[in-house]
Length: 309
Ligand code: CDT
Image 1 (cartoon, protein in one colour):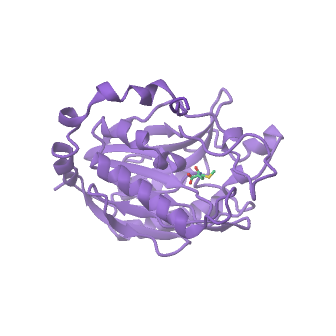
Image 2 (tube, rainbow, N blue to C red; image 1 turned 90 degrees about the vertical axis):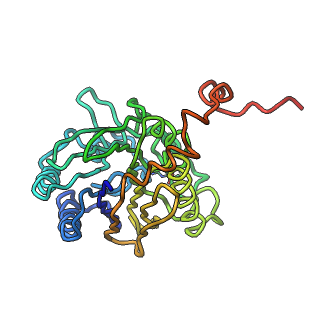
Image 3 (cartoon, rainbow, N blue to C red; image 1 turned 60 degrees about the vertical axis):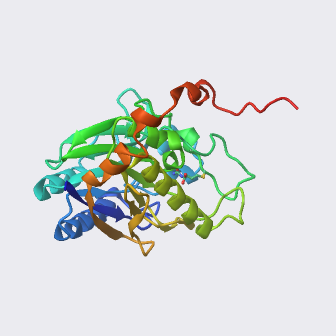
């Protein structure tokens, strides 16, 4: 057995005027609880340090950049890394990244048990739109504020296993998991901010959104024989509701633990990374069963090309 006890640290809402120092205090409280639960790794959500600001339309670059981190760790976030090191606990942290040359990404970092950053991921599948859309019930302006990630889907050998990262909308795309699956990933970490209602289809509410969340994560786990730990920022933020439903899924695609609230909540499970071996050597033994001669379209085109009428 290679046990990694994971704490999915769901965060409740972060209001627009809540300073990062207050949020970090909440996160440190979850780390303390994770330590009491003997966690080896804590996973925070996407854009964990602020409100989900892409719901707001902004034009002023200075106003936009206030939501971004210019360094990681920074003075505000260093206590998280210090506490991780003190507790010997790895950490996934989602945040908005502003690079020294002025590029904007929706990013996450993975720190090992010494608090050292061992990996960085930049969100590839940016949902939403770039311009104000009056047709929507509310805005989702990720394509305005972020560039698509330029780092691909790497994995990292650390903490006794092979870990990968992705962010929110990435979890809905089978390519995300498969690219990591092809590198032998044993645990995928994903943070999310998912509105409870589809801004373009009001009939699609929280039950269906939670269903799609589970469906995507469970399928990704099963089809690649990997653990997946998916962690929400949840509840009513700036008047806009977001789903909770943080969950830990095993390599058979089964939910092992799931959040019950839409607030700050820790969901803990002891995950055996050796449980990934059976699927990886039988039904999803990629080397034996994949037929890449038929998959060319996946990398050759984006939109569909149906046959002519
Ligand atoms: N943050 C994020 O990626 N949210 C998306 C919402 C999609 S609707 C524009 C998600 O996939 O949950």
